[in-house]
Image (cartoon, rainbow, N blue to C red):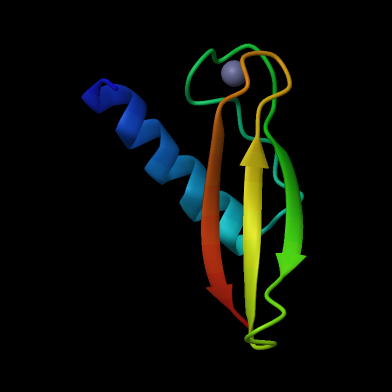
Length: 67
Ligand SMILES: [Zn+2]
């Protein structure tokens, strides 16, 4: 994984952590916007797992957020 790609993931994560409806280009292929979905943590109700997924290249990353 290149440094630039890592930096793009960090930028995407910051934006999406603030606003899950924000349109962020996939940090890997930069062709389509990332899909975002929130998965509640059953073991810890105050925490939510925010998944970022690219439909085009399959790139995937996860944020852990505290509500
Ligand atoms: Zn992609």
